[in-house]
Length: 232
Ligand SMILES: Nc1ncnc2c1ncn2[C@@H]1O[C@H](COP(=O)(O)OP(=O)(O)OP(=O)(O)O)[C@@H](O)[C@H]1O
Image (cartoon, rainbow, N blue to C red; front, side, top):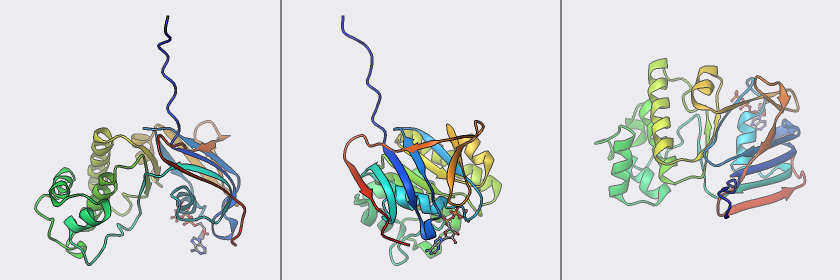
């Protein structure tokens, strides 16, 4: 009789970091992230959360250890980082390489219908954040990295943005790593909460107070690399 067991999906991220970040702010951190999982990362200001995201996202190669991650990663930063000389529609078509029609659909999905011809400075911070989220999802990521995407929004707007994020993830599932200072955001959005502490920073699993293992995997195309420290 054939087995009905489905093999476990490959992780989208496997990280075995020995040290890294500016001034070696990060210590040994092992982390694995599975497809579809939402993980929240909390910790005091300056502990190294953004530095870790940059290594995971492949923006910072200055670390020792091993990183294996899907090639399909999208990042949303605290600042929306839109192209200021491009319209909202063009910020989608140029970056996500989609048609104008598809871009208009994404604008509609994030509540920006009719605003496609506006430049980023003609949008509110909340609207820029929506555009930034649309751009990330339009790239069809397998791993989405969010660095405090709701910071400095009023509570009601932040809640609306979380509802939007939940809807976008439901429509187009991806593994998500969310950096946040707000416990309520982590509780609402994440299945697992990790906390970074110390210098060099390590990771603690919330509520269990055990050192967590940070891993990341990829479902199809992956990039990987082992590195020795070459940077300060
Ligand atoms: N480009 C840089 N050059 C030198 N030091 C840096 C640089 N970027 C960050 N740092 C330092 O590295 C440490 C970690 O910064 P990081 O931004 O990763 O922390 P964080 O946990 O994300 O903080 P926050 O919650 O305030 O955003 C801080 O001490 C910061 O001053």
